[in-house]
Image (cartoon, rainbow, N blue to C red; front, side, top):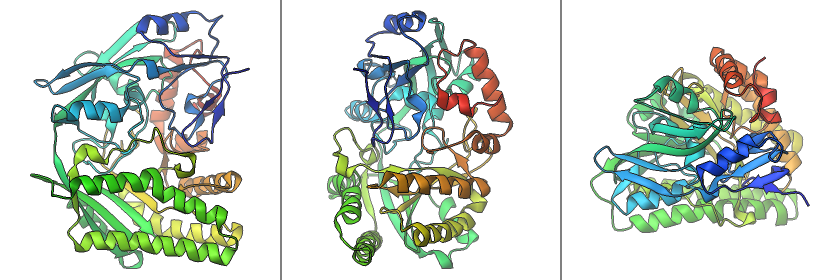
Length: 454
């Protein structure tokens, strides 16, 4: 019986001829050198939280979870070095024990450090110097497609590091990474509800400029801007707020949406139930505004999804839009989603997310390379996957026509024309460099073969 690999939400399944879990670098080298025993394409896999088949292969999949050791914490250089299979949530706890943290504390804590080192990531609640997690990586070590060892760092070959930060394992298997870190900090979340019809570009700009980190949650026709700022210490209810937030995203939100879609018997009652649930979400964020928001330690916003039951899992997509075009795109998205609902009787059963992410040129495929972006992220706990897939494909067309920028691991059904339009000359340069690094196409799976420019 063939091996089976599924991604986080179960929407993608792969059956590799070989599924291997190396424990050291020498074993990775042996795998890549032995073409007969370990057929291509060879893909490295972390926790496979991705929503595209970027890590899929019918040849060889390397499960990196066995290489998960912390190698060094340097409080003088403020760096953290670990093997690539270590998950963010585990690394974060290790740092927390020494009153340290990552510079960007992502929500999806099960992303491995190797994936963070070479794939797209999203999180808008830390702001900071750069807009993306991988930009704080100062060094990467990997095994090349031919089985040789290679490395790049800020001090040694920064141009190669710039390329590797978004190489998606197409140039080899990342086995060790070094991140910048900083002292543990306390933060405060504040909430600003605003009717979307009343918003102006100037007001959105003011909200952005006043925020250290920003996510906007849209429920119905109301936007809730969730901002953060540094505080000297957390309040007495910080741990309770952090636990409640984790519970909401790791259990309650998706489970309620899925229950409404699958168990409420009639369409009018389903719509009324979902509207009532959304009203509760709006009330919660409005209440948080009234009480002045909430405080927590920054790493506490990272969520462990490793034991999430199937009923509480959700899927999403991510397209980023130039900052100056986001408000128009958001309003047009709401019109698009309402028309789609009338036509197909489908709507997302979770709030719409939007991440603000600052300009960042630290990698060749940075999706904020040309300027600040604000995303539109439909989120849904599906019970009818064909209906969700149809929505995603139509949303892709909407986003593509609105100058949207997709992510290779978080934008399902992304196509070559999408990435060529979004990344322009950088995509062609990336395609050339990938082919030069792997002329035998040892790492190239069908997903990326369809995307790379000729």
